[in-house]
Image (cartoon, rainbow, N blue to C red; front, side, top):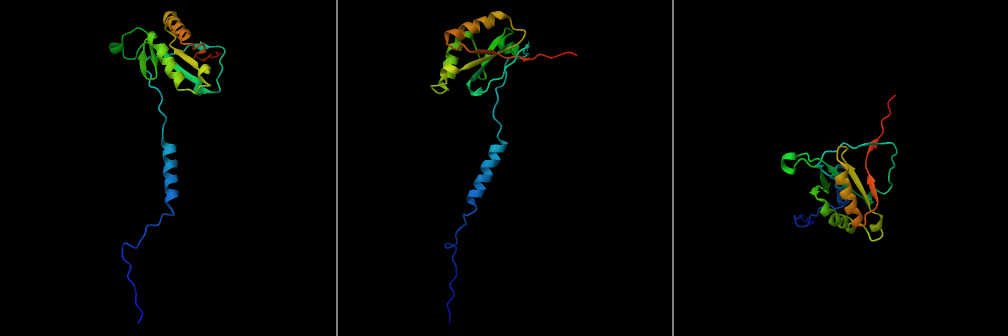
Length: 154
């Protein structure tokens, strides 16, 4: 008589041939559904109009400074404030902030950094001049002034 051997549970193995497909499907799912975080504005922004606009090719070299009245005047006051990377800073902190932004870039790109100044149209020129002076001291001389396109009335 022939002997039949019973399979035990320890001999059964889990097939792993579909495992790479499952991993790539999960990777693709998370890549598609992930939303990159944008900065939350803590200051009001109504950009002025401009007649000549130019777009830059390499946006990784741009660091943004927002200037405007705080959205929460009871906490921050009613005077125009400067926002950099989700935090309100003073003009004395700009030098430190520029150096931190330059440290995030590669050695070759540090001299090519652009500072985009997004100032509210109601902000007076005094705070803007103070910011320009601090940026000069930080050796960040490429300043972009953000605006909206000129609307044409017909």
